[in-house]
Length: 474
Ligand SMILES: Cc1ncc(COP(=O)(O)O)c(CN[C@@H]2CONC2=O)c1O
Figure 1 (cartoon, rainbow, N blue to C red):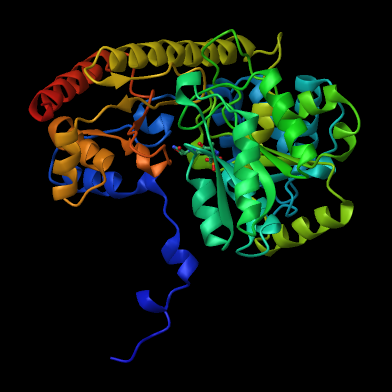
Figure 2 (cartoon, rainbow, N blue to C red):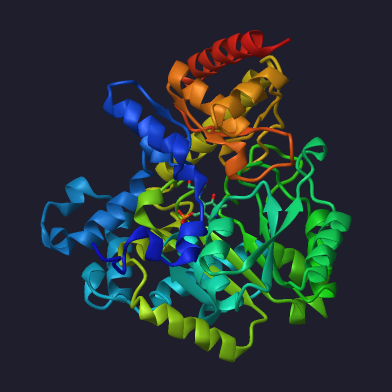
């Protein structure tokens, strides 16, 4: 048969080059085993509702009414829905001409963008312009839009933390750009070092790469570290000195499990630093309804906020957003509700706070159970999950295990994670999927399995791991 346009060999090379390990080899093998009837614990994806977390009640009540506005005309609606949910549904329906079935503006519903701006103002104490906030189908799409606008070709580089969330490496590959790694220091609790940043940029420039932007993920995925205000000041100063735009991925800003380093946005620190940075440094910040104590991953709601971008650049980003017509309208309502939740005195306030606090407190407990569990295992060390939703233990593989992996044609941490999966049903992501220093191996799991299941999962992991180490140690 003649070679055809969409045959593998004829596909765009950038498509074939990009990798996304969160749903890679381990996930595919776990899905096969599940089909064969094996019980699988999918802790590979930060997907809270898939692991049993209940959705918050109030947002679902409001969106249900927005999706089925005829319920608002039912005389019994007050028997099923609280008055503030009814009022909120009417509030959003009034903002969305044609309701949830109609396209919105390509930047999102102006009223919701205004609510996001007000949220940012309350959080940071500085004005925020709704015209510089675009709603997106999850933060993923926002990241892809901004990287698409930034990367002009192979010689454009993006400074990305290693280990990193592979949305960045995959998108940079897809767009034909160059990933410029900066290594986080595991022994310094995954801290970043400005000298390391400078070296990475210098090495890239030496290779003829123009470094255009720097990505920070705060709190970190997969590493879970929270950046301090001092760290953020260093990063902002560095980006200004090196003329880099800063892309601040802050999707886990609600997921904080320690009190020493509370979340502080890159934008607040930049504004606190005043001119010239607050007036000149280009910053794009990303957020989502997928994380935090919402976990509404499937709704596909997100936003990005642009600071210090020229109006003509904003217009170009708007033009490209308009190609996809409209962000997901129901998700925009979720975003509005997330940034503008029930207030003290509202009928649903107590329930909303109770549910939210319950989820966050449980996540904090699970972060400790998992970290302590890993640290009780042979040849395993693990930094505490200060934030986000993941645990990223270092697995010190004996040389014999590395040889066995090579003999099996597998990267060592893939070999280990496959053995773990076969033995326990625990589906993780090998550290090689996020990038790691040469010769150092990790795996990523989420802290999302139900609290009551966590001790048994960690015991099952420990049994497997200690037997594995026994088998391969000299
Ligand atoms: C750092 C980071 N940014 C953006 C996203 C995308 O979120 P949206 O759902 O808003 O597009 C994720 C999702 N985290 C993936 C999903 O689950 N496990 C992960 O590592 C993420 O971890």
